[in-house]
Length: 141
Picture 1 (cartoon, one colour):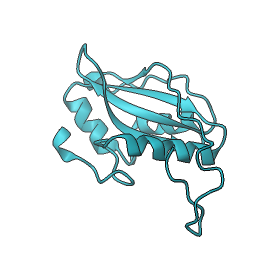
Picture 2 (picture 1 turned 120 degrees about the vertical axis):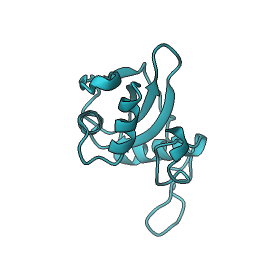
Picture 3 (picture 1 turned 60 degrees about the vertical axis):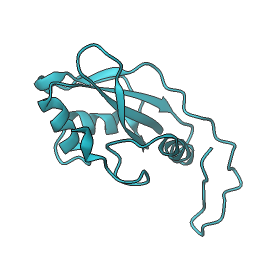
Picture 4 (picture 1 turned 135 degrees about the horizontal axis):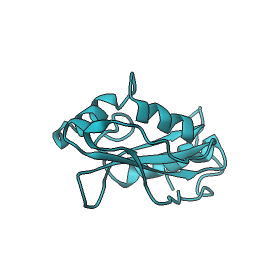
């Protein structure tokens, strides 16, 4: 698991005791150019989620990983657009006719959700993540 540190910078005693996120199948968030938001059945509690794009039939490409105290509310914010941290990327994907999908994994606490998010961010370079992951990758569009 990732390094989980306290406010003072010391390593947390619970390091290594967090479970890795277990994701279910992905659900369609928005479809192609329509940008019609499909409400997905995420739970109202802490957890991590991943956003992915796909064009037509094919394997989705995971573009973004995040955590929230209320995964359902956060995915609603992403799906409805507006002044969101990945609104530009989602708009670019819609302009290209890509479907946006999301999947989530519940966590027991906010602390565990943050540890799981750090674990995910350490696994690969997500193109849409601007913090904790080496910066945003603009070449994807």
